[in-house]
Structures are given as C-alpha cells and as structure tokens.
Length: 98
Image (cartoon, rainbow, N blue to C red; front, side, top):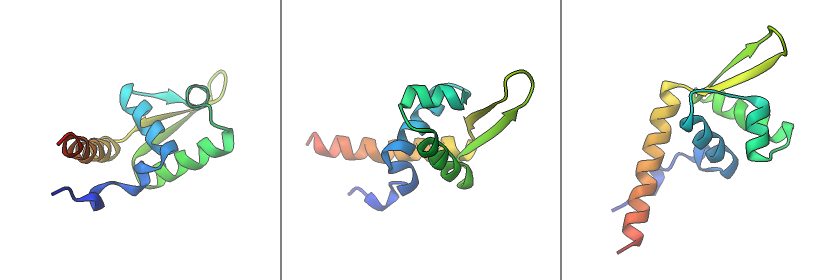
C-alpha cells in the first residue's frame, strides 16, 4: 500500500519540484540561469527558493566579486528529501502500471 502522506508537500508544488530537479542534476545553479531555464519571474523564483532554503533543502551563496550573483545548491538534507520524494513517486507509478 502506498503511503501518500509521505509525499513531501513542500517539494510537490510544481515550481519547487522543478527547482529541486534542476538542482539535483548539477552541483550549483545561479539565479539567472534558474530563472531562464524555468521561465519564472524573479518574484516567483525567489519565493520558492526562500521556502526551500528555510526548510534546509537548498543553500544559497552570494558572490560579490565581479558581477554579483547568488548561487543555489541542494543541501544533503535536500538531496535526501528529493530522493525520498522520487521513491514515493516511483511506487505510485509502479502501482498505476498494475
């Protein structure tokens, strides 16, 4: 039996799931690259990143040398939460295949 309550509600939102997926794919993304890849507005993206950062899933590092930018990466807790989320999704997909 699938325990749907194990789906992390923070990650499950479309925008945050997209961010987590990109951050899981490579070690670090800067804000502008995330914004471009996801097609989100500044406000929408920063709101999602702040939520993920507050939960301890995403770290942020401000770079002030040269052109200022902020870089984002998954934390160890974020990677674990994302892997757990994917495991529940895999159970759901497998159950749907009958």
